[in-house]
Image (cartoon, rainbow, N blue to C red; front, side):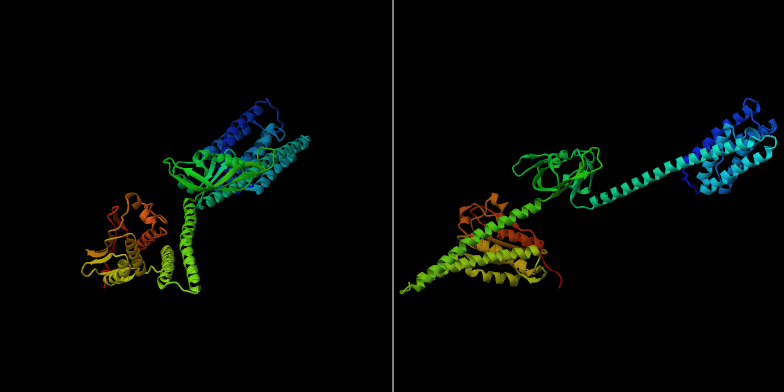
Length: 545
């Protein structure tokens, strides 16, 4: 409401009102003591004026306490009235050298609080003029009034200015403290904002490992909704290393002298599920700690990240390189050996029989075809994972199935198998990636021919309501129950000796599952060991013309 040199708070204003209320009885009592002659005063006029002034003190003090200030003019009038009463008391009752005069310093403080420097100067000038006026009125009868009033005025000024300086100094410190608190809060808010926008779980702890700050990712990683603040960070994690040895996180933190990264750690949940995590942690060093040693550890920052998927991909990549390099080595060695033999045979003076040469070339050709099949599987997997050539188009099911049937007739005849076609009337049109759909069916057909020694392979297509059911079934070796849950895993090959006798990378059905996912369908497997297998999936009929 008012602009002062010292900030006027509600508490300060309330304190001034109470001082005015409690000081009023003291001032009145002191005036009565002077009136009854207990304390002599050369400025005392008469009892009537004294009683009038004291009555006004009581009235103004009570009114100021209970009546709220309505406006600036109202407040100014009260200040004028208080100054008038204080000066009248000194001029006509106590004088400027009595103890009462010191209370005038409170007027200086109130003026400074409410009206700033201008109010303080006005208050000082008013009191000074009153002291000089008193000297002018009483000098003839009382020459000592000059020294008395000057001493009293000096005391009032010193006390008043000292009080204001002390309060101003305290307020300055208070403002500095508030500013520091605001800056600290601002920095804390910034750190908290940064932490909450990090995708990795981030903890800040004290030097004993108790969590002081954390972000939402921490709750996700630890799978909890409980507050983590104040908890020992070692109790939040159940850690083991690659050898299965328990790891205490706080021990890692206390041993760290710089930023440290560990990616060989596992965290186990209460349900015994475990994940691989990467821990990055560093000590927070401060030169302002309680310890006299410089760079004292005042806490730690810990960043935890779930790297289970990355580790799995890394292990799959290593396994992929190992399997592919092993599978490539054998056919390449065979091709190199047969071609070398062929070269030697052709270099002899008497070239061997045609049948011998044909067998050698055929062996090399079979291995080259195997290599081509492997490269094709890898290429198909790469396309499916990258989403290449996945644009849907209208596919005539009848035309596509007839073409596939003709395409694999020779492979079936070579193994003395029947490649049957079971297709209902007008199977319709499906809208899908032609490449993915054909490769999915090709994988099933080639697998069925490969693992069927006698009997038949049937390609069946039937429309049921708005769906087309594609099925490839055979009378082959079948798949055991245990293998059925694993055959769609990357690089998986059954331990069945009949499967091990045939070459393969274990990618075929994994690629098939990836293609089915891209086509928006699911592969259904029905199989019985030694009684054949059936792979099927459904696609919606395209009803748009």
